[in-house]
Image 1: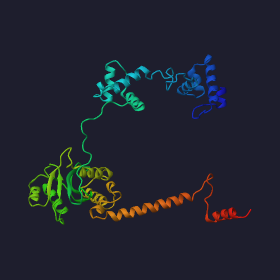
Image 2: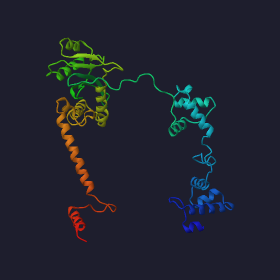
Image 3: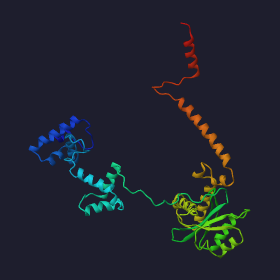
Image 4: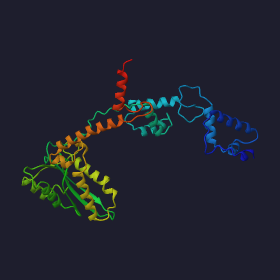
Length: 356
């Protein structure tokens, strides 16, 4: 009744002072003779978890090699179990097992009974390295690279589904050197003639035949496209896996188009989809600087306007750095004091040069 009248309660407030915590703990311990611990904690609005946490903090562990007291946290791994995990992680005989499989294998072998998450946490904290140096050569990171526009093209088709399940087929040609989308078509069915249309549109003003990198789909390998190669309009190279003639450049454009633009809209109709694609292709070619060209757009690289853009950006960066330095030097604080103006400098020089 005294506690209720006083309004003393510990929920929704903190006791940062260690002395105050010690007084509360002593009061709870003294009340154990008359009240159960659960009732005493309920009277002061102190949760059991908070009470036991205070008790553990009050008992200092004397084991220097332990991050937490084993008696307070009895479920933590023992040093022998940690040593066994380290031996199995760094052993060459287990290097073919993934970490999750290795944790399950250790339990079947009766060595360590710990979850895979605990194994991963120990490996991350202790910095253990598994003996898994790769000898087999890596896949090539860089595909074919052109030295001038219209040397290599990439052509591909992707399928986009509308909300009602209707399929739309998007064909496009991208220039390898500038990453510019040269032409594209959106069709309601997969027609081999569409490939010929976008190739002829992309190369209608060219004086030399480009090399087209394409996959072996039916839209790229057919009689109509073969006739274009026979006429000398284009040369075709089939994209393959793990070789430089890969079609990853157009695949990267598909990924950006889908996840950065199309999937942000409700694709209801075929006409709406065409408008969205037209907007993104225009932005990609004329407005969006490509990371491979240091601030230049595909159109500027394709039409050889790169030097003018680089010079303008370099001059703008110099001007921005100069303005930033002037703005920062004009600021002051209590430590550095107000900035010296020219009038202040003249007064200081006059005092320094005055006769004694």
